[in-house]
Image 1 (spheres, one colour):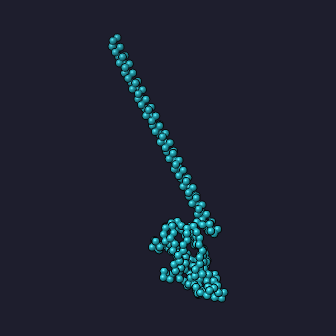
Image 2 (cartoon, one colour; image 1 turned 180 degrees about the vertical axis):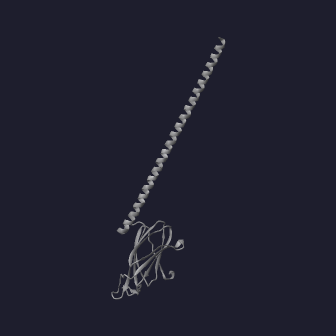
Length: 222
């Protein structure tokens, strides 16, 4: 497979969209490599048309399909996308880890013949048009926007819940500090009251002993 492919170098800046087209011959895959940061969203729309000898033009055919594969070359070619689509469609994936990703397109089904340009040059029998968007962009189609909006809303909900949890933690810490201060105050009052009781009890005992001693001495004298 690797020997039959062409490697297309696409310089797609993060957050930008770029449309391109190329020609494919037979069932040979065409691949390109993208070095993606972690958690980067990649959206792709494609259309493959087949050369028609009668009309001398590229037309859509229902018997032609495209297989899309995405492999993480930095992780022993771990495959994260293996999608079979029709002549036109879309694909979406998110980079779980930062590194180089190989994105391949392989024609499936149908008989393939060579095509020709207006200049008469012979090219591949399949014209493949690709529109890829990497990262956030305002050019995403409405249905893709709805998916991203839904994902953004979920992230916002999660952030709101995290903020609620943080506020609850701060509140609990404040309550804990307040409870600790109250406990220390109560304990200090209990200790003071106990000391006062001991002092009063000691004074009372001393006074009683003094009184009794004086009383018995008086009784002996009389």
